[in-house]
Length: 280
Ligand code: 13P
Image (cartoon, rainbow, N blue to C red; front, side):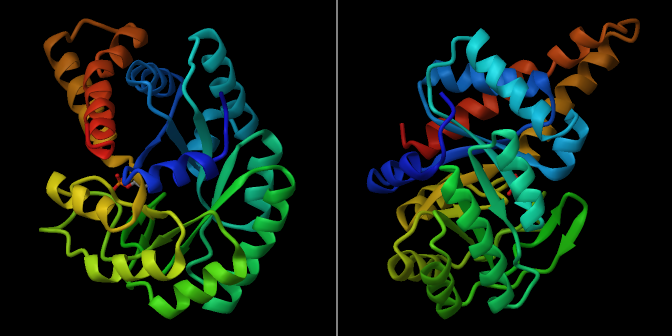
């Protein structure tokens, strides 16, 4: 069933677990992720960036794909269809109107007051439609949809003021995390995370989940992370398998066989992340 993030994040927070957010890019990835999560009986968040949505034909198409797959594959777990890094109020409204059950408004490039203003606007609209809202404080590093960002740690006071004034459902604070492949060891500020969790009392989101070692993931969850975003690791594992398959089978041209050759490695990442995040 399609749901918003509120209940499942609050449940996860109470149980000291995290919910996996997997970014999707096409019909096949969506199907593989749904099948694997359903097998494990675990709720998941399907993250769709603005550019992934364009690639798939727009928000309505993405919604139709997810909705129909849930029905035709008999998916019984809770699924959140979530706009990842919505860049403006109007973009969030478009996703909500198309049927998305959750949005992230990323106005972190603005100063605190403007970030609060646009986020609150999104929250007010989303609430009427029973849609959950995530927002960002500080700057998460690396590249998101081709936009390069410098790491800027979240300020604890900003986080407190921000959550109080926006009434968001979950917060993505920059704690040294970055999108894409980390250059060297990630330098995560666990103390800051713990403080933010204590002072804001909302579920916290970790962007840039790829490349963080398992022991650190466990520590992050223990200190308040409740949603973990994974994109790059899915891309790397899927494309490595497809590349190997094409190299081994140079005469193959059936796109279904080519795309499917990455299915098992993609599902393996999904399985391992869910098991890790749920501490199984
Ligand atoms: P990675 O690409 O580093 O896994 O991060 C994904 C993400 O945070 C999407 O918002």
